[in-house]
View 1: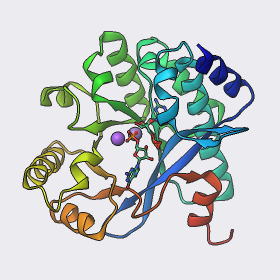
View 2 (view 1 turned 90 degrees about the horizontal axis):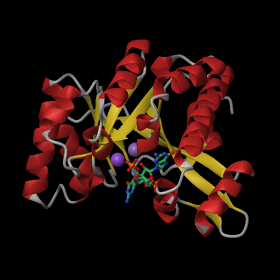
View 3 (view 1 turned 60 degrees about the horizontal axis):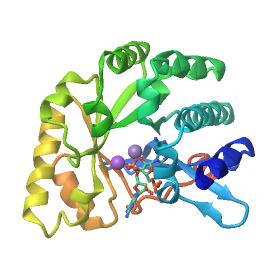
View 4 (view 1 turned 180 degrees about the vertical axis):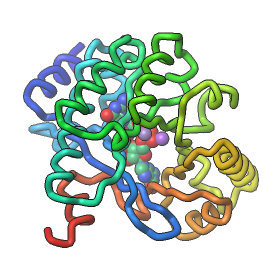
Length: 254
Ligand code: G
Ligand code: G
Ligand code: MN
Ligand code: NA
């Protein structure tokens, strides 16, 4: 209760902010996307990551307003980057289960994009296997209409949940995000390496982009590239940072 009241106040007082973590094309080192990640700029405690408040948030009625804020803020930021003249890149936004269940996901996402004059193709919505697994027709219909409009979908934390591989086929997804638990000891754990290899091969055969998450070392990067992974995200390339830091990375004039 206490934490939930605080989160509501935080939302009202605009203490919730988005940081962005770059996604890198491994062959060129170019930034081709960024994942938006929620942070709480707490007046006393400083910057707090979602680990400290995500479970309180997810058991509250605040996921819809917070989810709407995240979408609005990400689209506002994309429009700002466009205005500065940065080369366009995709922005990944994580969805809460309640947003998918709401029945208004498609209209609210499209309305937000339109309000900020942002092309739907700039947005990649990330859903976890758990969200995907519990999807009914309501969720699937909104996914399909968003995808028809040009929004893409990523399967987040892939390999860690309980979704069967057939879930991948039922879903209108474009991207698989290989969970960092597979990446962490890929160099020393033959089983993890084999599973990762299979995920990358499946992604390629299904025509999906695979993003390896949590890459920290050159050794992990080299192995993933050898396995055919094209995109990486992780501390090796950059931590989640405020939008201005992404601007500085991409704009030679700033
Ligand atoms: O950076 P990291 O600690 O930022 O994120 C921890 C977890 O919080 C991740 O699993 C991420 O998916 C989730 N998360 C971060 N930001 C958001 C958000 O805006 N919406 C949702 N639904 N989840 C988020
Ligand atoms: O949405 P998702 O569950 O994938 O959220 C990504 C999470 O992973 C965030 O908490 C982010 O801060 C974290 N993260 C991103 N890159 C790295 C990394 O290289 N190492 C570790 N340990 N965590 C990372
Ligand atoms: Mn994610
Ligand atoms: Na993930």
